[in-house]
Length: 255
Length: 255
Image 1 (cartoon, rainbow over the protein chains, first blue to last red):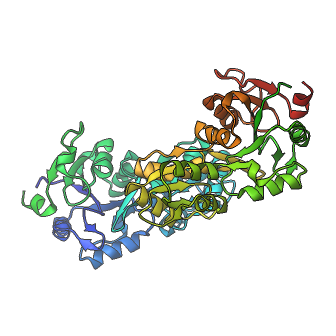
Image 2 (cartoon, each protein chain N blue to C red):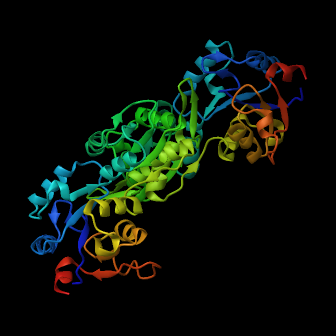
């Protein structure tokens, strides 16, 4: 395997599949640790706090400190901080998002918001959409943690945050700024966090439309695995190809 | 005023504004009754049953029988019946929609639906969106009572049914068939109900983008009033103009 100075690693489909560890995940992370390579777990999941995600990884036998987890919620909170300290934010979202916004020193408000932030919210209701629309119509900037249109589950493809966000876009005519993968915003923040220039980092992921495109948009080399959503067959005709392809991380470690 | 054989009359912005009767509404309807002209109240409101709407009109002093009220929910239920008797329907919507679907002899189901029907639902939640998406992905046809993106209220512009429907469209990639104004579907059903050809009917309404365009799409003459949403100034440059314009129904009766 070609060696980089720092690694940005996707979770779902790369480290685990639901509650099951993916082949090579533990070995790959152990290899990075042994060689002293810094790495960051990067996820579009906005609902969980980093400690919860680190705990899940550790329970699956994959080493993780909570400081090594970077979520689209944290990226969204940082994005706001870059523009305004102590902003007033109306949030649709779960614990991970509300927590990240507060941890950055912003204030959660119901009206007169500077920002409206949308993350997946399994407790969504009409009143939340009403407040989001009224705040946006009053001039709040619209952010969305990620544009995923569907979430793969054992029940089938459930509506994702990009789909849930569209209510506000269609009603107000205001397009959101999406923060998570495949946007470069979250990638640049992850590089900042790692403290390495993009030339020295590798993005490892399974989903062409989120992970790999995020790397491509940010100018970071990418390793695409076939352990999750996308297949090499599917992306054959794509204009932009990952830097490397490997069936799984076991093969990559051997290469 | 030019006389027609039958009238299709909008409600919100034409007969009433919130809980207030609009000038000329009572006089216009009394005039039609005195002259024995059949008429139908036509509304994109999918949440109320026709009896509830007739009651509201009567309370405001405007004559209405429940048989004279035709809602986007009733139009949607009829649209299904034209294609399939006793269909299995998954509904997101309020009393007026659920009632209309049942009254046409269809069955309300949670899964294996032939149709997914979306109407405004102030009790919307994530699980309802999940079921709508799963049914659509399993091949159910997607219908939406109306495409209104916003509802004017004293709080401001709240998300309308067209905006709420977009979650399913964005997540599944399946575009809905909209039934209500400005679609011709609801107009043709209203004409059927009245039993008159389109040449003999007049559509009376205030909203250019729903009422007037519905008339234009269905080839029915239109009278645009300035008592609600749209103004004559706003529609000046529009390619398609209403057949008649009148500030209000008092002026129209005098003309």
